[in-house]
Every structure is written in C-alpha cells, then in structure tokens.
Image (tube, rainbow, N blue to C red):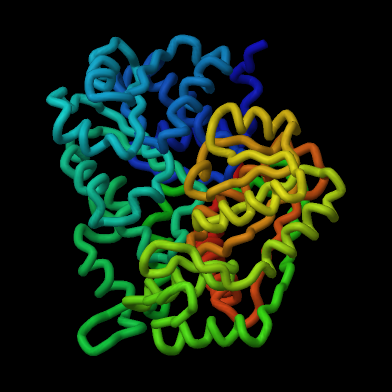
Length: 455
C-alpha cells in the first residue's frame, strides 16, 4: 500500500514549503528524516501545480540513484513524476539523457561527463545536490564542472546531514554551489581572509587555518536565510545511542616498532622496510600499525600484533549471537578479520552488494564487514542489527556519521544502538577520536545556529 501526502510529518511539510519559497536552499536534515521525499514533494508541486520548473537534475552518490526512483514509487502523490537514471556505459547514459522524463538522476562521478562530454544541451532549470558535502572541495573536478553550468539554473537545492564534517572551511564551496558566492564570497582567498587566520605553518606554507574571533557566528548569520536544519532526535523516536571504547595495548616490542616509525619515518623489520615519505603517509602507516599490520615498501603486509583481532573476537562472543557490523579501512584489515572469522566458524559477508545487504537485513549473517566509503549514503541496515564495531579509526567525520546512521535511524527495532571503538592505547587511534569530537563540535554549532523552528 502506497504512502500518502498526509503521511508526511510536520517538519517535512515545513521543509517542502521552505524549498518552494527559496530558489537556493541548504536543507540540513539528519539521516532518516526523509530528505528525498521532501525534495520530491516540493518538485512535484512546482512542476505540476505552479509550473515554476520543467526539467530537474539530481546529482547524488551512485548507490542513492535508485533511492530517488524507489521513493517516487513508494508515495501516492508522486505518481505523476517520471525519472531517468543516467549511469552505465556512455551509450547507456546518452540514452537515459534522451529519454522523456521530469527528473534526470546522475551520480556525482559522471557530472563532469554530463557537463563537458555528453554533447547534450544543459537545459535544466533546477538541480538538487544530494549530499552537498561532496562538493566541499573547490578544486575538485565535480565542483568546477558544476560551476560552469550554475548560472543556467534557476533553482539549486543542497541536501546533507553533515555540512561541515572537516570544519568551517568546507562551507565555502558548498554555498558557492548554491548562491554563486553571494554570502561567503566568490573566491577561497576572499573567504579565508575574511574569516580565518593561519594556524599551523612552515614558513610561507600554511597547513591549516583557524577561525577569527566571531567568525563562526558571522558565517552562520550570513547563510541562515537559505538554510534550515533539523535533527532526527528532535522529530523522530530514535533508539538510544551508546558509544564506548574497547582499549587494547601493544607489548614493549610492538610499541618500539610503532615509536621507531613515528620518530624516524623508516621502520626496519625482518620482513622488509617500511617508509613514510611525509606527514600524511606517516599518519597512514601509524593507523595501520595501530590496527596490527602495515604495508611494506614492496607492497607486502607485515603483521605487528593481533590485539585488535582478539578484542573483536571477544566482542563477537559477548554479542551472544546478535549480529555485529564491523567497520574496517585497510585491505589488510579486511583480510586479517576474514581469516579470524573463518577460524571462528562465523557466518559473515562483506556488505557491498544488494544481496549482502539483503542477507544482513534478514539476519542471515552474524558479522557484516563494512567499508565506510562503500555504503556511506543511502543504505538501510537497521533491520539487521544494532551493534557496530570500529576496528579501524578514521579521520572523516562524514563517513563515520553516515556509517553509524545505517543502524541509528528510524526503524531500528532495538532500543539501543551500540557503537564500539577498538582503540590501541598510546597510538594515533586516540588522536583520531579526539579530532572527530572537535569536528563534531564545529558541525553541531553550525546545525544549532540554523536550526529550523517550526511554528
């Protein structure tokens, strides 16, 4: 049975009206608040009732393309909308672009092709950037391609749950996509000069910037007129979320390997030499070593310890049959976890296909192995379990939150979602956890500053 427009929540109707009233808008809605159906309802009204738009482009992550199509089929009031998904080979994409439809859905990796290589006139009058945060890099090809056609669009809507996952600097490119620089400036140098000062430097080279006093409030003030923000905990009955750390500790010899790597950027091991060329590479190597293995210069894997594997085994056993989602980052993390799960006789699968997602949600798996970058957006996993274990600690707040929100969302049957971090003491793991909290503080301030007040 299809859902009806009367089934929309009050906050969704508020968001629909906001989109209709604002030709450029940033809709910051938490995961599970229904950004897609909200946008489609506004599109349907403007397309069929007020005739303000006629052809719409949606740019979204690859896995989310089908979500837009599914939402149209799910809701009765959207039955008049037609869509065409632009993906596959160049021939298939061209065919999809030539199809007769109201909405054309393209994954963000193909946006540059659409603008610069397809040969099809860019005659859309509205664009929805689903996951606006993926346009935070002003130097990226997708940002530059979009800005070429931005003046042709009458309406641009940005949807996201994580607008500033790496700090306030992210907002420049995101809002330039929306208003072409009206609020935060047309150039990154202009934005930096107005709101930031150099923080970490090496001579003339600036590695990071720090907001000037009062800059944060001023940025929020400037964007508040086209931004609304809502948290799922304010509007939905959400499960409790409990985060905890399962600490492990390397022994003396393992710690020495780690400290040698950190100090000298070169680690001599019987299996081979491990070299870190710069600070970013060193961070990567230290993350690997904290997890228990590291890639040598020749590409082979050298195992350092199995402390995290032992901790993961304990957590799986303590779950007493309840499904456990395990987030990993490096390929050797996956290989080592897989080997241990085989030894334990545990039913597992990598969660990266529709079939594996189905098996997880049907509770056919005891362990699901999840790479945060593979299923960050648009995938529902809440039916399969309520425990997620972070075997690897990651720097990206956006990928972290999106992964946790696969379980922490409306429809979660358990009263509690448990997020467990396996952290190696006195390593970079602890710094990453601290950095994520600092980024979250900045993002929370943004969300609170532009939070919608329903009347």
